Length: 152
Image 1 (tube, rainbow, N blue to C red):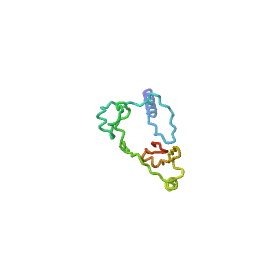
Image 2: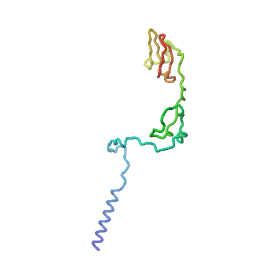
Image 3: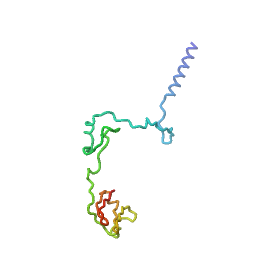
Image 4: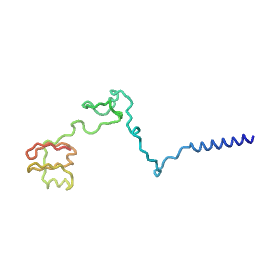
């Protein structure tokens, strides 16, 4: 009987130790130091998107792909995770006949250190403020008798 009690005690102690070792660790705190490790190249490589009928997936996208020459079969992200935005194709109007101000006139709304694109051909110089190019992106102009395009 003594041996049976002794074995039961050992068994209880073993179960208690095993239970203590398998308890979940507390969640990390901001000050916890986590081990630094670099993922292997195999782990870092993107996983291909599970096969999904392309036509079915394209019905769920929020953008028009009709004018694209992209192979939509080759992807790692579902197309439905993308959303359209911004102006439509050709929705940003170019400035075709820009109007210019004198330096004094522009200094009323243009700060001294504000970025501009400057073009000088022969004795003709023009400055195209970035704050305007942000909204138009293209200016068609003639400087020094030469046709030019300013893009941003």
